[in-house]
Image (cartoon, rainbow, N blue to C red):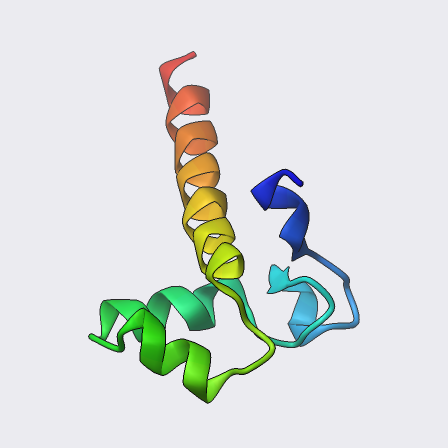
Length: 75
C-alpha cells in the first residue's frame, strides 16, 4: 500500500482536514504531537488506532505537500 493512501480527506470529517484512514485523527495532530516532543511510542499508546505506518504516512503527506508547493513556485 502506498503510504499516501492512508490519508483521507472528507468534507464532513474534521472540516475537510487530512485524516489518518477513517479516523478523526488529523495529519496535523500527529505532526504537532511529534513536534512537541511526544515520542512515537507515546503517540501509539495514546492513540491505539494509529500504527507506525500511519505516522510515516503523515511525514509522506507533509513532504509531498511541501514538494508540490515549491514546485508550483518554481514554475
